[in-house]
Amino acid sequence: MTAAAPAAPYALPIAARPPRTWAQTAHAAVALLVFMVAGAMINGSQFVVLLPLRLVPVRVARKLYYEGIRYTKGAFGALLGACAQSQSGSEQEC
Image (cartoon, rainbow, N blue to C red; front, side, top):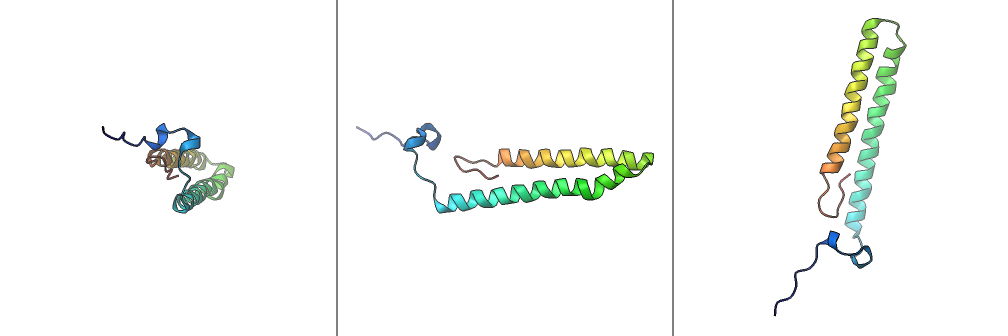
């Protein structure tokens, strides 16, 4: 008679899962901090760099504004994608 292999963490009911360790909690806090800072930097660049371009009544400035908005939109999408792909097992990177 062989012992059954332990179930994967995602297969266990939530009440039966082991509690999180302090390292996992600290890792999640650091990941949240990094995500929030990165998001604030992307949004801050929109206010500091792109908003003044929007206020200039020149066609070239308007083109640069829309190009910058597309770029920062892509940067935020890449940030979300990096967070989604960095999940491993039950730990969450971002």
